[in-house]
Amino acid sequence: MATSRDDFGIAIRSALLQRGAKQKFSLFVLILISIVIFAVDNTEIKPVKVLRSLINDSIYRVSAISSSPLRFASGTKDFFVKHIFIYEENEQLKTEIAELKKQKFNTSYLETENKQLQEVVELDKKLAFTTVGAKIMLDKNSPYLNSAIINKGSNAGIKLGMPVLSKGHLVGRIVEVNYISSRILLLNDLNSKIPVVISPSGDQAILSGIGKLKPSLEYLPENFYPGDNNLVYTSGKDGVLVPGISIGKVLMEDDRMKVKLFTDPTQIFLVNVVLEQQTDLEAM
Amino acid sequence: MALNIKIIKESLLRLGPLILLIYICVSEFHTQFYYWKIFSFNLQFIIIYYWILRDPSILGYGFVFLCGIINDVILSLPLGTSPLSYLFVSLVAAYVRNATVRSTLFTDWFTFVVAILGGNMLTYFLIKNFTEMQTEYTSVFYDSMFTFILYPFFWGIFELYKRFIGLRIYD
Image (tube, rainbow over all chains, first blue to last red; front, side, top):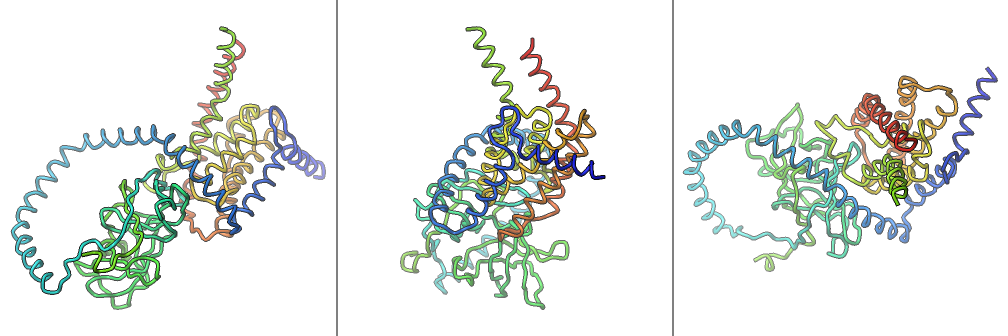
């Protein structure tokens, strides 16, 4: 028994301390360095933050270049898969076109009516945000994080917490800012919690990422029942996000109130980071 | 001249696993092989475990540490999380190498469980206790499971590669 414990001790000690063939560092030294780095990185010291930001910027660039062959391979595979299912898609599109033709007449009437109403209540406002356009460099869907990295950072005026739009709809917010790159935390990430308001009822809720494509709504009023056209907008209650940015449509799925996002977070390529909200005068 | 080219070729072949490890850490490998929110595997663990166990002269601990740092930056984890996890895997591999006289696929495979569980639990513990990040432990579980299942497949590939390097060096 004692001999077996001795053997274990000797083997572990040897594994930790022995440098062996062509090894410049022992495992023990590197484990100690890792612990020190981990401790230092968790502190909020400015020089460490600057250093981390520089490391991030350089590694993101290298990563964007090195991952291009993988992305090309993935794109090619998608291209062939799409072609295989093209007949089925064509049939589906024909049905959709027929339905849309039917709806066209209704839409035309509603459009006219809507325009008249907008003129009455003076709601015809343009996009009321000052934004900066950016391109997705890397998108990460790991078990730990659903995020994307964009090619703009503090050099373009981006700050922590700023909302990010794709095609005018919210897709996430900035959680990391480097000098020439930033990280967006996507709405479907587990760590994403956003205060929202549901239209037309005006009910408040928290849009919470669950690691799947459709985030869920939490803290809804008890008597809330989803209608056909319940849309979700940012409420701006946190004081960080601009209120009134469209997010998605409420639906009931798996006995849970979820939101079908207007923009699929896995398909974003170009985004707009909202720098600030314009005044009504500027917007006009 | 011809001898120099041969030496360079052999050196590059010996660097193959290291280049692969750095490449998968830097590139979006994890994203590309993350299907149906279930299927993902940690190829870094497999490479580190196999090469530290079988031929430590191919993969230095310093490079394992460096790859961990790169992985942390890419995945936005606190610096030091992945190096600790990778070094734990290296520690298990080094221990198994020291403790066993003759290793087979099955001994490697079953001791790999300790390395995967320890490595992932270490990452999970650090994230859970020292950051505000939330993690889906079911995803981590699936990741560990597929890493374990796929080990023999990569073991076979690496064995062939090792023989190929051997032939290149000693032919």
